[in-house]
Structures are given as structure tokens and as C-alpha cells.
Image 1 (cartoon, helix red, strand yellow):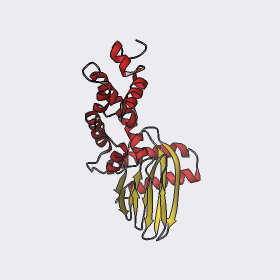
Image 2 (image 1 turned 90 degrees about the vertical axis):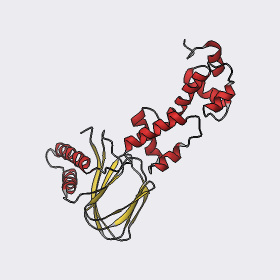
Image 3 (image 1 turned 120 degrees about the vertical axis):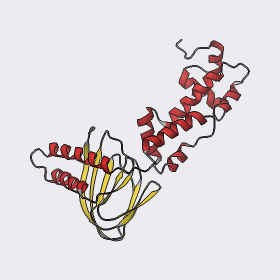
Image 4 (image 1 turned 45 degrees about the vertical axis):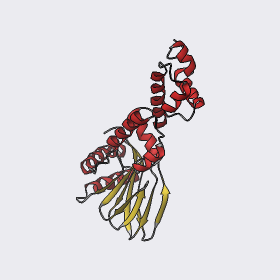
Length: 250
């Protein structure tokens, strides 16, 4: 599997009534509940857990946890080139539990070749999670493909990127992170880029004023349009219209 890096591994006995406040990490966190029960929240999405369940929380997603019964908890934090969504999964056969226990033991005791063993077990962990992966329709890549297409087709409207993240039940930080991973640029950059490209096409129509083009392309006003266009193309919309050049270097 791709570029696995273990960041943390620990086990703890949590008590009924314990409340872990909202927080986030810059790595994936797998939290395994071998017994007990409780509830949690990842972004705006709630979940309940019981024995032999685990949650996989992507980087930068805020999450909290409330214990309704005493629970033994194992946690593995890691970075990987693999892409996973938020998941609540059932490990009824205990396969993931065994893998996580081994990773924790190797990281804690550090016997000979422990780093190599952790990498071997990380491959098993990634493969087993793929097997158990939730098949709900809110698949991350498909969701982001929808968002990208929506922006491309509705750039002229008022688009609130934060509300898109909320609708997907993920934090805005994670929304930006995954969008850039998939598209190659941030959602804000993509939105501006799409609007500038549309404006460039419209500038060939001399009957449209720059102010009218600005509004048709979703910019707040002509000043914002001019600034964004110049930043992207190297010249102002007026200069582009006069010269027909796509950048100042032509």
C-alpha cells in the first residue's frame, strides 16, 4: 500500500461518562472499541459504537466521543497515500482488532525488525479496511466529482464553498484538502479559474461591458473581476480586450 507512516498507537480504558471534546489531527485516526458502547460525532455526522466496531477519521475532521459504558479503546494514527472517507465499520470476525493489537505491541515494545513488521501489518490493515469499506452512496470521490461539475456549470451563481462541505458532512479543512487532492487546486482556486476562463471567452463579445461580464461570471463587482483576471492572466480585462493577448508575455 502507499506510503504508510505510523504517527501514534495507544490503548486506554475509558469510563462511562467520559467525554472527549471536539478536536482534529493532521493524520488518519482509527479508533477501535473492543467492548463497551457510546456515541460520537465526526464533523456534523453522528455515529454510535458498540463492541468490535471502529471508526476511521480522515485528517482535519473535527470529532468528539461520549462513552455510555466502560470501553477498551485502541487507536492507531497514520498517514497514507491511500484515500479513505469517514467510516464506521463492524469487525465482527476480529481481524482488524488483531492487526491493530499487533501494530500497538510492535510500536510499544520495539523488538528486532519492529518497523518492518509494522509496515507488513499496515498493508494488512489497509486491505482489510478496503474489504470492510462502507458502500454507502456518499462515496468521497463521486461526491467531489459532483461538486467539481456543479461549480463548472454554476460558476455564475453565488457559490458558498463552506456550505458544500457542510452538506457533505465534513470539515471545511478536509473539504479543501480532498478537493485539491482530486482536482489539483483548491476549491477557491478552481472557482476563480472557472470564472476567469468564462470571462475570457465573453471578452470577445464587444457588446458586453466588463461590468456586465463580471456579474455574468459570478464576480462581486468589476473591481474584483479586474483584480482576479489580472492575477490569472497578467493583464486586465480591458487590456486583454484591446490586445487579444492571453497574458502579458505574449
